[in-house]
Each structure stands twice: as C-alpha cells, then as structure tokens.
Length: 432
Image (cartoon, rainbow, N blue to C red; front, side):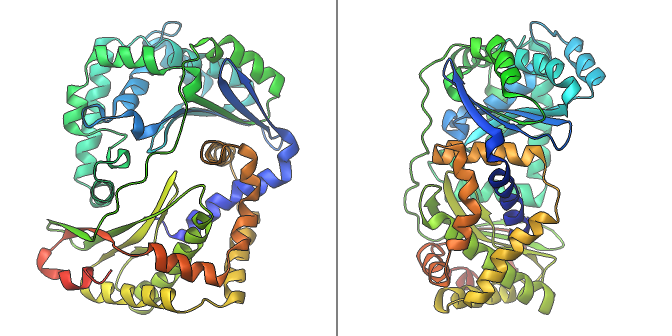
C-alpha cells in the first residue's frame, strides 16, 4: 500500500506540468477517435497510450479478464507482424507494450524514443486492429494469466484488495476483476475473444494520448493511416452507477501469517463532485496522522495508510499490517474521531498542500505520468484542460471542508481481515 503523501505527489506532478506547457497540448478527433497530443521537447522519450473506455462496465461475472486476455493474446501476433515477427521487431526497437486493465478503462501503450516511435506505433496499432488470435498462442497467454491470478491469491496485499473491492462493490461493476478470475479465464472461448474484437474495437471506445517530442501533424498522419480506419461504433462513456448504500460489514479469512492485514473501505463522491478533492486531502491528512501515531510513535506497523482510490466513483479507506490489530484499530478510531471533530490548523493545511507542490519541483516527472493525468481529466471531467486546475482545486480545500467530508463519507466501513481470527475484536471494527 502506498502512503497518501506519495499518491498526491504523483497526481500533482502532471497537473503542474500541464499548467506550464498548455500551449503545447492539443486535441483532435478523426472518425470518432479522440486524440490528445502534448509536445514535450525536454527529452527524446515518447509515450503513447490507448485507453479502451468502460473498464469493468464491459464485463460480466463470466467474462472477467476478457479484454486483458484479448490484448495479451494480440501481442503474440497480428496480421502484419505474425508470431515471432512482432517480438523480434520490438526487441530490435528496444520497445515493450504495457497492458493495464482497471475499473474505468484498459490502458494499452508503450514508451520509446523518438527515432523508434513510427516503427513501434506500426506494431502497436496492428495488434489493436488485426490480432491473429492463434489458438495455441491464446492458450499460452491464458496459462500465464491463470498463474498470475493464483499467485495474487497467495499474496496477502493483492488478495486483500480484491476481497475489499468485492465486498464494497457487491453487484456493481467495480466488484469485478479487470484482470480476471480463475473460473472466468478458464471459460472464455476463442470465439468470445474474436467476437469481442469485432464488436468492441471501435474508435468511439478509444482515447489516444501521446506525450513526447513529436509533432501533432505527424501524429495525425499516423492515426489516420491506422486506428482511425477502425469502425466508429456508437459507444458513449459514462461513469458507472452509484453503488447501493451499504451497511457495515466484515469478512475474516484466517491465515497463518507473521502479521495481520486489515482493510476497511467507505464510499465517496464521484470525480465530478466538488467534494472529490476535499476527500483526497482529508485522506492524506488522516494517513499522515496514522503514520505518526501508529508507526512512528507506537511501532505497531511497518505499513499504515488511509488510501484514496482515484476512480470515476471515488472511495477511501484505512489499511494496516500489524501484529496487534486491536490496539491499532483503537488508535485509528481515535485519529478518525479527531479528524471528524476538530478543525485542522489552517496554516498546517496550507503547508501540507504547499509541500505537495514543492516536492513536485524536486521530482522528475515522466511522459507516462502526464499521459494518464490528461486521460483522467478527459474521461472523468470531459476536458483534458481540466487537469490544469488540479493544484488550484487542492488549494481551495479549507479546514471546514476536511472536517465535513470526514464526517459525511468516513463511516459505515466494510472490512476485510487476513490473519489470526482470534486476534481481532469485532466490537472494535463495528465502531467504524
């Protein structure tokens, strides 16, 4: 789990870059395909991402992991680059493709140097447009994904996160696994992959974001010759429905582990809600207090956090690994009470926000950071230029906002516990 200081730093970074280089960012639409290009001449690195919109809204219980399986199988060969040809070409170019399925989109992209951009794009686009989907290659990919799923289920943190999502988002798309479950991956047929390719690889479902030392006119030419030739389709992205209001809940899974893992979720506002950034800040404040009280002063944990989950439908929670869950939960409840009852010092809040910004100038941002930040603004807020207002929105959060959102949203936690069941007091969990 990541501390919220780190999370906020990563998110602030691209926003500031956008404020500085907005004139170099532009957008165009061709055959229903939205493309955002940010020219960055500071280096020769270019990042290109396609965001396939919908994420887990595209899935059912029986098709969890289908899009990830399709894209991974596409890497094993396409019409112009069959089987070993694609891998040999990429190896010669020094390139590698990334597949990152998530709740609101699946990212398929690459980072390369400017000199290799055109050649890498050719392989990349062909895999999206014309994957071979050879049955033997598909089975190799399926076996690898099944192995990854089993490995994740044997690792405490990935298992904890999967169970927490399933519990918080019962009968909701966010409760599905974008990387797949073992039963779903086994049941997805080759025909299902081919049908999905034909029906869902349409330009209206795609957002392309390219950041690097490449001219917009050149990008337009590449896109028009490749992805823009896909069918347009009629897809329109919208955020998933709000989850049904949930009461407190607890899932306990006994495990013989050296420490106990605890995660509690609560539902938050949508990304378009004015409370979204206030809850992000409130989570950061709570995370810092947890770190000070539980790790630094009491040495009860090597990892404690109050994560904020940056999705179309925001949510937050608390997380800790500890050998003494009851004492740790007691301290967490006390810090949460303090956040909900008292006003944080205004100057302290200003210093916290300013520290995020100062830290940005000490950290080298990447083109990949910028690409995803621009995509998030375009998808969630309908305009990539909204990214440039992020720092301003953080600075507008007041102590009264922090206390209000802590009271409004940080309640009715839904918990997952991995470890020794006898070490946990359910009465303490029920206080959240």
